[in-house]
Length: 105
Image (cartoon, rainbow, N blue to C red; front, side, top):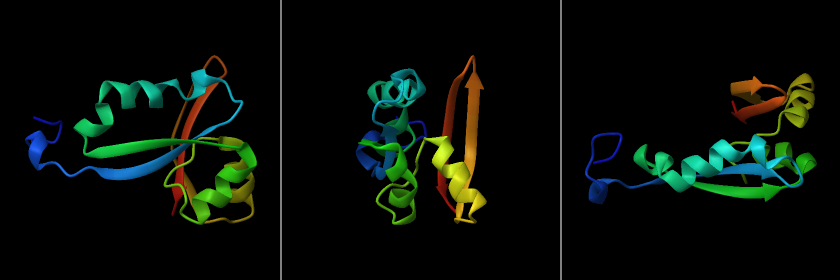
């Protein structure tokens, strides 16, 4: 059974693409890798593809739908200030380790 109560054979996974930033501390993205490896995303009906991408390319890739979600906050803040149609819907941080998930509105 999956987290959504469906037998695994009946579950069609929705593919989503999330970035991680080249050169950024892996600890910022570790929860995504652990969740993928432990099957947490699949339990919720998601096939998560983690794509390495440079920091400045994150927002353009999101806006052109090459990525479904981005995790690097500084370019997203700049884009929001310029009224880009994006939203941050998750933000956590502790001891200078920050995690954010950003999508198109």
